[in-house]
Image 1 (cartoon, helix red, strand yellow):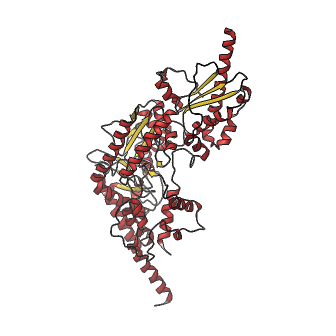
Image 2 (cartoon, chains in turn yellow, cyan):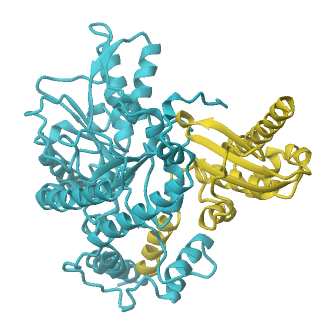
Image 3 (spheres, helix red, strand yellow):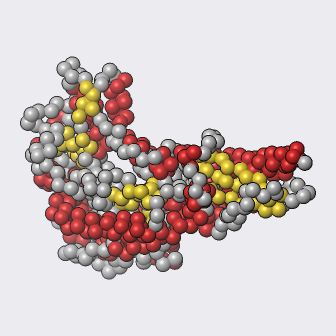
Length: 157
Length: 423
């Protein structure tokens, strides 16, 4: 009976069970980290352009703000999407994924994206589901903004 | 001698040898301390924790994976900068504890044999070590399972005892949850207020004297001062006498205030930790102040819009809380995944609310979401702090590029004037 392996095992055990962050999950999911380490679609578009719809949702006091912008062509297809997010890793990943999914879709299809699909793709734990909901809201807000702009333009003409 | 007796004697001799054997070299190396007087008599000569033959292939998969991580990727465990949540066990404390886990295993309350007597002696020595650190008499120290228990005993025990004469309890908004919840429970029992101090984070780090500071009750936590987890103490003043109604019933140990067998090895650990802290307080303070100042000064001079939470004059240098405007705390923690840190108060990590402590000291709500707590301790090195500083600067800059609030700020928009959509 040697004490050494037991002690080593004990010290390694206590080490491997350490939490990396104070989120209520043991670790961030790989997909969530991927969206941060390899960001796609981070940026801004010219909000004044008639082809751009901007959605700004959330609140700084809640720790979650997402800005999602879409560029729509004459046929109603979303040709480009950009986002910026102030929020946790899951929020960043949710909004990033949202921009990836809506590119290439038309306005109706984009409006059908559900938060549950985003949550499932990123394996979000229950406590982070609100991030995917906010991402869905951001898409809707961008679509609504675009439609409102188009209507105002047609009225003016 | 009969066979059985030889076996027993052999067993005891093995233990006697191990008394000296103590902490594995790997633990000392990990702590970056020079091993002091450690004689490894296990005879294996293999003290390094990276030795694969020491890992049981049938054992816990988490241990195997941690081991793999350490050896294959060249050591990828994060740097530890979360000293307020817990501190590593000082190897010298482990040295003191080990014999009581292996050979001197008697119950300290057993009055009839040597096992009990030697265990009791160790417990009383430890009690004196704890008392000496805070200027108290050993008779005023009772061992508990930690500061949470000590806080519960103090708040509920004192209040209930004096119920008929006074029913006033005073607390502050920045107390730990266990204190606030105990007070809340008393509120339900019809109390209004009292005065108590939870010194879990202060003991062993700043000089404390219960008489100079007129403290009546004080909670102490073992694992906050490089001692073992699972043990703490409660200081209860005897002159003038503070009476407490126990919250735990049983055999009447610890002057009837806290029944239950005192875990001698843990008590010895707490005593050793207190003694070391007393001896090394000046050096530790110097070391920690230097690193803390380096962290704060370098970060605030390299990044704009960084707010130091707390009073810059009256602050413990090992606990640095900074808010990085326009960047959310959790995303910064994720970005800094190779450094173990905390955002806001770790105590309420399961809730989605920003730290109530920060809110209580007047931080804006969105800044509370942007805060990170850095914990610097006895074993933190310059390299760890330098690396952390470098990573913070690069990740904050990167996250600001991804932040709509930073964009608005740069465009000159007043964020406070916007009508936000609440969820």
